[in-house]
Image (cartoon, rainbow, N blue to C red; front, side, top):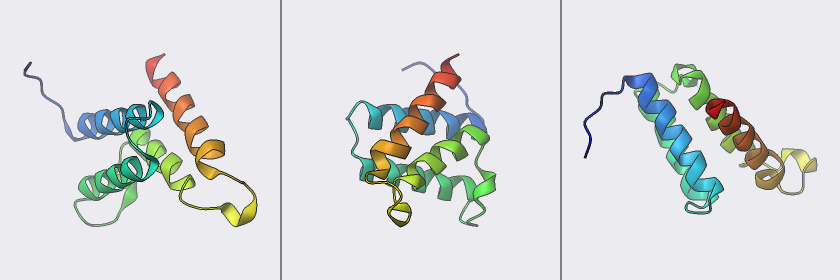
Length: 97
């Protein structure tokens, strides 16, 4: 295994990116990936529930998964397909550019 160092922001962003990629590839279910991102937010905030402590990319991934947790008052029929997946795809495309 190759040794490398990550600061807190780098760890959060790599974790969020990997979780998004595994979800989009079908390796993780929505519930598994959503739980992972929720755990990341807890880690980043060190238990204080201050979500703004997530780095920007990780926060946007968190928000994409959060959007899939709700039916948005009936405005969407499938929040995961209509909101979460398109947001994650756009975030990953931007991060790779």
